[in-house]
Image 1 (cartoon, each protein chain N blue to C red):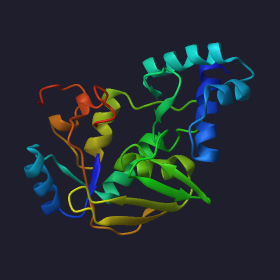
Image 2 (image 1 turned 60 degrees about the horizontal axis):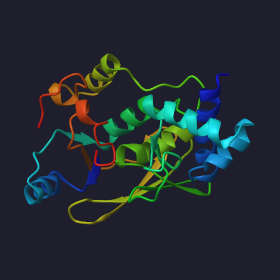
Image 3 (image 1 turned 45 degrees about the vertical axis):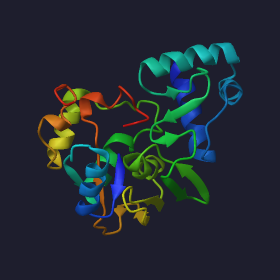
Length: 76
Length: 146
């Protein structure tokens, strides 16, 4: 889970390493994920989102499809 | 409070106030327990995916979003320094702390440095991107690589 300066830099990096290019996430979307996952992490009753919740969180910021589904294990 | 929750709170409290991972002795002291009892709690918290431990079973590699070891994702907040496990966790450190701060990282391809100011309402406008290579279903198969 890495930062890149641009889409071209992601494409270059994937090509160099022979990795598939995955969906790109903007910084604003990443902040939503960070606050959703970790906003209560220092509290007693904090917990990780469950798989169904994760799907909903991703979909809520426009990240949909099997890549973001923790129950779909079809990617190499 | 259940003992494992006490241990979790002690671990996270130590990270939040120092930026560093606690030792078993630190957690034992904070919970009024002993190292053997805390080691057993660490194993249960690892099974629950609350902690990721080193091979010695007692050193904390990750208490997400905090990293127990230095990484390329450094966070400054409240006069302290933290490390995130990944780009997501770098922002996650500030989300967990509920403090403004600055994320220092880099473009993985070009090495260009990233300096991202983050307020309580979120990061400053930025056209940098986040790329996750591993699909969600496999994140915990190798969390360090993920």
